[in-house]
Image 1 (cartoon, rainbow, N blue to C red):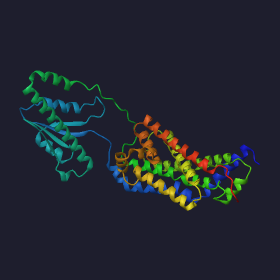
Image 2 (image 1 turned 60 degrees about the vertical axis):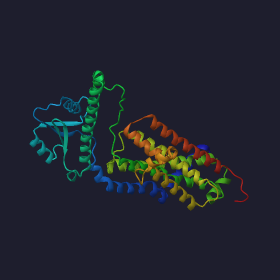
Image 3 (image 1 turned 90 degrees about the vertical axis):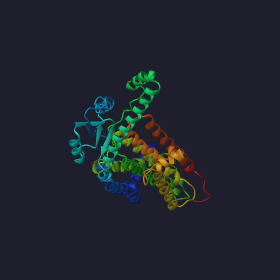
Image 4 (image 1 turned 180 degrees about the horizontal axis):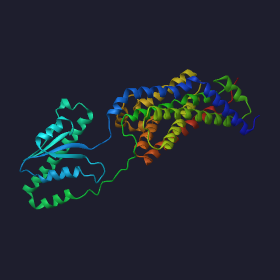
Length: 394
């Protein structure tokens, strides 16, 4: 009979060797996510290059003779100030002919013509095929529409209740003091990054195959190795613990390789805090291994059937989190938000997303806490099912 430490190291070592020899397990956790990530990069690469973070919108301002329109000019001046970071507008005040030439050259995205009324002139729709250009023109249209709405309200108040006009103007000129600034990290704001977050979540859930193997080979009615371990005087608790830790570490290293491949080879921006990214992946692997351990512990079900259950469950979770269809998670949130609250793939990918955009927040901590709670539940249920049993024959 081996001592406790000797047994632990022995089981840890041979489980590590076993994982390295299991080509199917290594394919699903190591190679398949890398292949899929490469395909994502090929499919979305040009799209990623064509999308940009927010930048100042160039616009021309053309003043008609004798028409000042100070209120609107003040609005444009405010939007072009740099007091609060990047200004919304970059204005070029010029005459009409020069403004039209700038618009045709795509140097500016629109022309504000200030006369008796204020009008906006943009390039025709057929010349605005680029998504970025269309978005910039939409912002310019929104500025003008909001100004007209406010000016119309003030005009009606001046006609019906002139005594209240000064109060309204003071309220409009007062700086907003009720807005709360939300600090963002310098992470990747591209919506396409969600596919890569879900890809790592899928890799974490695929570690379930290794966890399932451990459970099945500790049950005498499911394998010959389980029968030998059942009659062995060695501690089953130490054996299972050592193998689970060895399995978890080896599977985590495979996921780390995937993350490093995406970050340093494909150049996907996962965020700035690599330690917390790896911590999230570690907890994701804990969930995957514990889920497989639980499935592998279930009764007299064949290994092929259990593998089918694990891969189907993993892919279903990833589908609901948006790996195959970007809006699926929002659809689930609309009709049954509870599914998102307990879906491991959603919790893992949302942890990456939260870390990428906001950093360490209560939402990030809550996601990890739920993942740990789910993994603890799977582990306890699995241990209860593979505890030492009495068999009629072995």
